Length: 512
RNA sequence: GGGCCGGUAGCUCAGUAGGUAGAGCAUCUGACUUUUAAUCAGAUGGUCACAGGUUCGAUCCCUGUCCGGCUCACCA
Picture 1: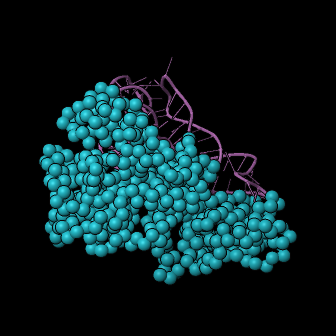
Picture 2: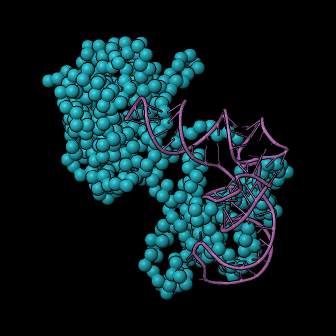
Picture 3: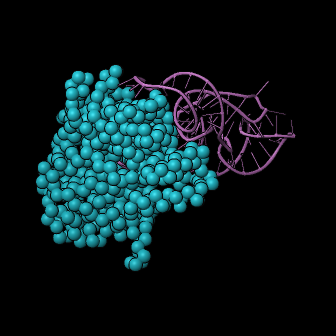
């Protein structure tokens, strides 16, 4: 579309005033009309950007006024006006681009009277192109003396207040673009998130893992205990589930001969929203043939320490009011030992289901189903007494077989599986196990899950016949793991809420 | 879903022991060519979340609804 055609559209738009528009909005729409009348396109797209504010700052960080005065360089950059301070025939702007912030000095003497008249109508929030040479002001701030300014995008809505900024969390989450515009620390969190994911990917590739993509829409929702979202395919006339985990597909790939695979992507779970739960969240799952869960503990320690060093510059990092020490080696504790350590209960109590039940109900005040299995009960006791205490990294092992339907039983004790979960700052960050590759055992576990499903457990695993068939062809001895990326990013960016590390967290529909 | 707290101008917040609202910033007008939360003078701007109830009168008291935060439950 030509610039002229654009102008025509704005002229047409002028004849359809927005009845409910606020004064502020109307004032700015009037400015658009003013520009159009003056033959200036308020949404110009012909400004060539050649530099960033960060480049300019870096190039002249050490130059004093005299050095700059003799320089002949001219820069071309663009960004949003974040502040303006007017002085009659001159003004200072703060212009922000993707790399940073630059002060611009605009004087009528420099840009000419006609341009200055147009410039006078620029608002905070407008996006402008700037050409000019660097200099230092009286207060020694590196600035650009504009030889030319051009309006590139007229902004119609006012920005939040310059000093307090935008603090209302509801607006910050619903209009993240505003949050990012005015809160630099928010931009930094999401830059770090991107960096963390890149580092993970790099680390996995370096260790010969193949990155794959498996379906997000599943006919059977498997691989985790969770309630799925349901959707519908019209042509196939069938309901599908958004995946709750990629596990069963990734293991099919190991059956197919990809010995090391990983996937970084979203899982969807139809459950509560909280400070550490979003309905869609990012998980990295990876599988390695001929490895055990024990190998994965070493691997996880190396991976997370590597990333923390790169992103945080060290292994002792702040989280909330306290520090977390990620220095290896990380503690390893069995589930029962952790309960004993943090509750002081006698180990013999945990060996008996009935004594454990009495302990849970009478000492801990837990309300549990009277028919609860011993394994599930131990897990609940652990969650109550130990999990919140696990501040520095610790691998918890020897999970009950009963709550681990996809894990390999321990050779010495079939009551537990070869599995660990990693806890940091009182939260589960990773879950890993040696995979159950015996199809006969797997089928029995599925049957047991089915029974629990029929007994009313909405989250029990469904039977996946094709997955069983894959196991019947033979899954090599394999270990697999899932790492909650959002929670890892929370840890490394010192964020209290998962919503602070997800760009567009799920919110209720806003009434209009 | 339960409990607690909250929703007042574009933003950040006051306020009214019930008599329909204020400040700062932003915006508009004017002055100003080195400011940086610029300054100075003046002005505009609100269905006080929404709907009922009590009352002569409700932004304020009561009830319900919507939205948000924290928390408990479920979970990663």
